[in-house]
Length: 162
Image 1 (cartoon, rainbow, N blue to C red):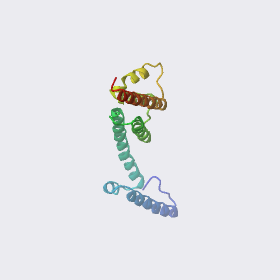
Image 2: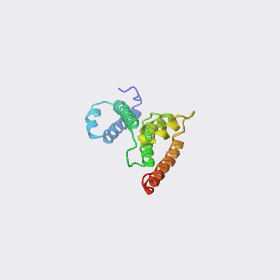
Image 3: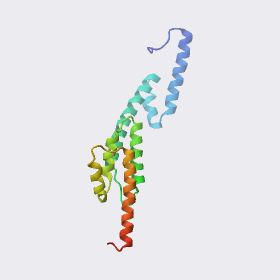
Image 4: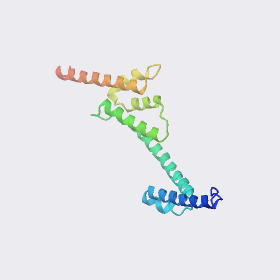
């Protein structure tokens, strides 16, 4: 007998019918490889608790993987600043969906660590500030720096590399 089973015969009948529906719903809702795992359990409550435990473990693993990816993200040659920031924003959003809070200052550090060596003077100017910019403000500053670097390259090209 389940602790939550009612004593009244009519309510007990309805309870058992709903309990079977709940078990069927859970079995129909999970991926095939989990059906054999949860179908052995007696109550929908046990099934749900077991699924919850499985997905909590997966959530921790997913969070660790996303954090590692975020720390390793680099702006590759040929990437635009917008693309680089979009990759970081996507990882940040995915981390937020796992319930893992991402602090703005940490994201700014990820950006600065992910910029190419040719951006060293820009990185030093940002790092030398008393207060770090927000992720959004850093994005604007990076777009301006990308334009400045592109203009400098065009100027070099038109003057024969002076």
